[in-house]
Length: 157
Length: 156
Image (cartoon, rainbow over all chains, first blue to last red; front, side, top):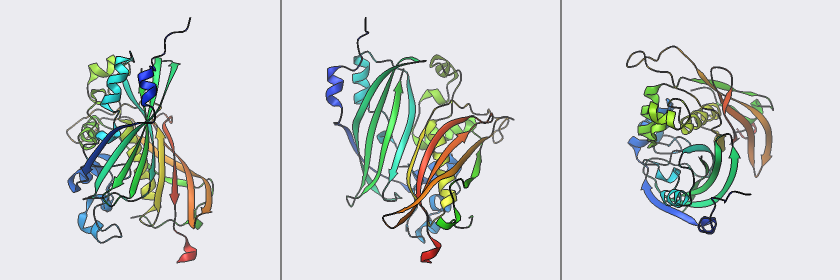
């Protein structure tokens, strides 16, 4: 007997669709706090005066930082609710990320982050019934230029 | 700042200068605040136990950010990071604090990498690397890869 799949029709229909769009500003202080939390003393991320004299002309964000709060890099709440409704396990782990960088992101940039539901797979692992959810987010700058694309994997078990 | 690395300086097998890191409970609090990831998995003993990981674990995204530093330190301001990816495979447990500033004795993590491919494409000098975070036992808990464009001496 096969156990019923957690990937319901309602979830299937969402694959490929946009889950969330958020617009936010990348702030100088947020960049500095993020760089300090990594322990990265690079003056491009820490010293506005230094950074303003480089080709970036403003404080640069470390790779992957897209401003605080970083809700755009999380598992969409809307999707999580649907998953739980479908009977998905509720323990959540971050599985990994792929970044593709196109344009530098720095202080003052206004980003529009659009998150698409990329896919979902169900597997039996040592953790039991496990779901792998992938989301793809594009970060577009105020001038309409694509700055960053990220593909994140979340694990529910 | 280290001196600029050029495309001509690297070959397949060239090692990226390793970057040591010490994860501490204090650092995880700082990371939570700076990254906005307030999952109790990273600071609450009981919650982490209930999640089945035993104790609070290091944020995957923090290890990813360390790998970002490994690469950007290496390629310098003239280099360009094009792709970075990693998988959070193994759990890492932070050192606890001895004093407000000083961690207890324990593990040191190393961010490492090596060149796997170099080629020219679309006028760019591209270098692919495998990268990883290694724990104190030498296990690669966070394997990944990076693609960078390096400056060339020929154009100087």
